[in-house]
Length: 206
Image (cartoon, rainbow, N blue to C red; front, side, top):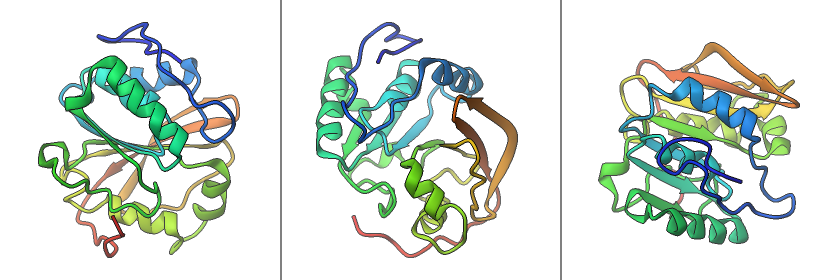
């Protein structure tokens, strides 16, 4: 994998071998970040189910201020930390080994990195297919926690989901779906904007 634009353009980053994580194709990443060009400078980013950090590191390369990565898999998390060190962005990042669904999404000790302006959320496809079809699933409750004003910015913030192309997710009404939709091969990228007050679910474990 490589960074495709910005100050780290052309730098290689490590990918996790095997099927544990699902790196995004360069073509899809280019389409996504072309859309985000105006939103990235100075943004506080969350990259959940980050794998080895492709999306969050691309965001930092293109001007995001900070990024919190959440990744549970031991090997992917180790490679993520190596990628962060390789690019020299340790001071701008937190590599949080945590569960992408059950997290509180509130890392401790980094008040300048929250609330988030942009959230990349890229759950495993089987999990998304199973749990994004109805309310009151763990993923639905995760979306409620993400909507809390101490997690995502009270003003409009962006939630970006990467999903199987045939899945139409059920999200809490605070997340308003944009008309913009990107499709590449068997995947699609959906954009949601946060509007109005949110009634967040109870805190998850750290």
